[in-house]
Amino acid sequence: MGQEIEKARFSDADFDNFRQRLEAETGLLSRYVRKGVCSSLGPITGFELESWLVDSEMNPAPVNAAFLEAFGGSLACPELAKFNVEFNSVPQFLRGQVLSQLRLDLGELWRKACAAAESLGVELVAIGILPTVPSAVLNLNNISEMNRYRALNEQILSARRQEPLKLDISGHQHLAVEHQDVMLESAATSFQIHLQVPLERVREYFNTAILVSAPLVAVSANSPFLFGKDLWAETRIPLFEQAVDSGGFHEASHGPLHRVGFGSGYARHAITEVFEENFQHYPVLLPILSECPPEQFAHLRLHNGTIWRWNRPLVGFDPDGRPHIRIEHRVIPAGPSIVDMIANAAFFYGLVEAFANEYHEPLIPFAQAKDNFYQAARYGLGAHVIWRDETKLPLKPWLLHELLPKAESGLKRLGLAEADIAYFLGIIEQRILSGQTGSEWQRRFIEKHPGEFSTMTREYLNRQKSGEPVHRWPL
Image (cartoon, rainbow, N blue to C red; front, side):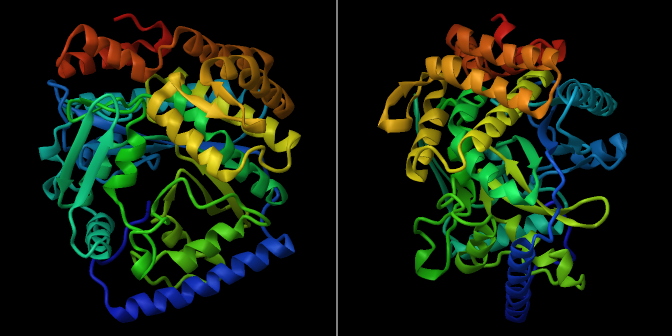
């Protein structure tokens, strides 16, 4: 979905032609994987960080076009709403002092971005859901001026037969609202981790990313509030799933396959099963025809970009032009601080590396991994999960006594610097021990200062600017 398109209206012939090309490219990718044509480079990492532009009252500031002009460069692009922007990193090999380097790179990118925002009289904040965002500003007047977003809105509503989108989220409180467009989705912003591994290992790492999604979403939770309601520890999860809710073909449109979700299962034999499912079970949303050769997978990549699994494989290309398949881990919210986000990434890298190499098949059924994920998203560090032998475990001691040592062993296996491993996993450990995720800090603030969401957001931004990890933030 990162690419612009030339038009926003399509004919039946556009859909037919696109689907034919999509079928051909899906088959070609399967042949590439069977024959080992794709890249064996890795592990290589990168990230995308979505963020908010806010005014002096901490309300959304719809000025991303002006911001991007002031920022310059190729590492930033608009998101769905005019008050959101996305930043991208340069891929790096996952070894040595890469964690420190990622922190430095993201810090420098963020400082440059904040300076560009301040030149316009606004500020940047990295937070999963902006606590001050009102439902009223999530309308098409604030959609970014790009054909792809208007086309996406039209096609999602068409797939829903023009039925309004409905949010129905039960957490600490209950929220039920209807919306006439996809702009609800813009209220959810993420820190998305990309991980490229050699082709022969990508299925195992993809399955492992699914397996560890529950502890990752619990330990990184940063989105408790939406429209003044206290909902899930990571409300971004049900928000995004319901904000663009549409399913598979025809009678399956309200069935178990949804365009945003946890997916339908592990990859059993090959990672290409996911792309085959994309073709077989999801109607095309944006039938933009490309004149690129099939080897560029233009139609497959565009179609895959309109199916938002919390873990999804992506097709890309190495600097020498060779195709690769990488994993995009989408469960982590933006914020609270630069060092917190790199610590979250370190925890992910370590867990995936350890489990993928120690166990070649997932330790629990997919249905259980899925249930664990939603329990962790709803209850955060207070969740209970089901692990091996159907044992029910409280999340905090499981994280401390099993998963943190596992992540440490994984990072050591990758050959990362010992000092970096100790520092960044130490942040995760202290966050667990204190119980203060970004979500809990926000809840404690509002418990102390009921209804003061603007004050809280200003204090959150000041703490974010300090660079301190969230477990050290006072109220």
